Amino acid sequence: MRIALLGAGRIGTFHATTLARTEGVGALVIADADPARAATLAQRVGARAASTAEAALADVDAVVITAATAAHADLITEAARRRLPAFCEKPVALDLDRTVNALREVEAAGTLLQMGFQRRFDAGFRAARQALRAGRLGRVHTIRAVTSDAAPPPAEFLPQSGGLIRDCLVHDFDAVRWLTGREVVEVYARGTDNGAVFFREAGDVDTAAALLTLDDDTLVTATATRYNGAGYDVRMELSGEHDQWVVGLDGRTPMTSAEPGGPGAPERPWSGFLERFDAAYRAELAAFVRAARGEVPNPCSGWEGLRALVVAEACELSRREGRPVRPAEVAERAGVPLP
Image (cartoon, rainbow, N blue to C red; front, side, top):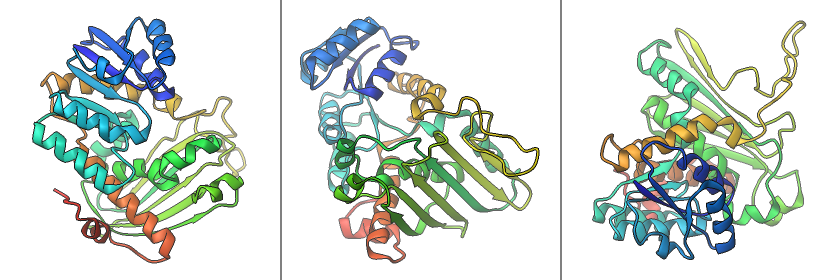
């Protein structure tokens, strides 16, 4: 299979390295808004560089989109019009209108669009889902999700990120839906911006918390922060009547026990998302290659990405207005279909 990779930044570099050794990938073409950066990466992984995205898409079988978020919707649309199956890092777009428009292009073309929610491919999350679906926890009443960056991103990243809730917590929202098979019916969110001034200048927050109510009355707390000096931390606790399972608790979880004789801080805490989810990212792209070849169903459609984004939008509205918000309200206001 010949694959075009569009975007040679940090995640694009990671995916290019992965694709170059993924079974079923026979050739890789790389393009970037900076042609020199594409050429450098192509040389590093044994791929071919293209001067533009259009040139990269000219003679390939599928496309992996890792460009800046602002370009996602247009590149998804272009791939659909060329009848190319596409993988795209989340989000499709930072607003609901552009997201729906791009998804309708994919739907009209009858092509595949797989969204990049890598936690669906993480061994811990998958084991927890299997345990939950098998009834090992009994009735699940509480879920607690944590996403913490070790350090803030560069100031210039914030305006294009969509903010902490859309950028980070959207992963938790997708994971909760995927794990439980339930929908979020109400959210209440708060945020604080007591860190660097560039968060306030961007209208963003550096720490956020959301309380979600699922359609079976399960309560979910989801927190995120850009300031976790102990290391990168992603965990999820699922508490049921029969048992309690924790995802992300291992020898590298950046935590120190306060109990006498309890474990201290790990020697090598997780440094960031690429390291923590290395195996998940590789499994995700391997699944895309198989899905693009028609061997397996799409593991995460664009409509799944839209549902997670609607929950994030509801949380942003709740944070701004200080009130509970139903995701259905957000979808109805925007005229967004939720199949």
